[in-house]
Image 1 (cartoon, rainbow, N blue to C red):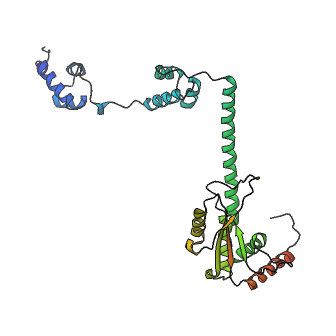
Image 2 (image 1 turned 90 degrees about the vertical axis):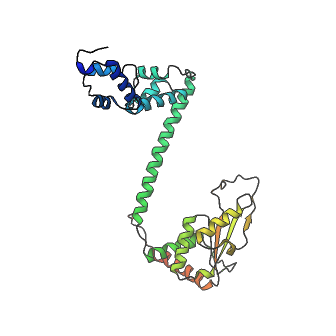
Image 3 (image 1 turned 45 degrees about the vertical axis):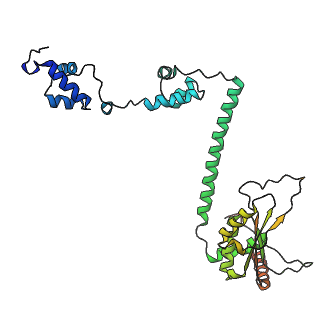
Length: 288
């Protein structure tokens, strides 16, 4: 087919060159510049019927939205729910998912229960976020503890959780039992502040038989920084089958018992320190 312009007279030969370049992956602009064809009508005729290479196709911005709409539809979402989630029109949704099966209609009461559950889950998430903010703010109020802060904390902690001497049972020795890793860390820091040598410490785990005894021993040994072989024989606690235990699960590791050898004098000082705190306490003004 001859064209009015001389340089396009051999149209079929030019078309063959254009198709060869197209199949080699060139874009329209590259073909235009290579063949010096600057007339769009002629270029369209030269490339007629030949699809463009994949790399020249612009990605459809709605491809991801379409895919997500189909996923939601397969999960049983309605058009209204998908529209609220993705912000697209119902007509587009209908076009995208028309080949998919329609979700089964839920019982109105079931739908209401589902909506109520989602509202409650949202409420719980809001409450938990507020809870974490409050805890973080309170932790920041403490700041770095001085030696005296740690000293006073340790005395109170021991008197609340540690073993005590009784008139009917003389036990002037320092022994501390707790299941809270944070409490154990503070207690060990306090003993270090008092100058208690780590060689004087003895460790033992108290735990229910049904728990992971070996795992608990390894956990506490890692926490206090000693080899598990240095732990004393584990104390197994008996469980009353008539009661329901709540301290179960993979996070249950029993209690760690920390004893201090040759600690009668230390115990007497701890009791004296506590009495000093009691006698030195004044009625609160109500202000922190």
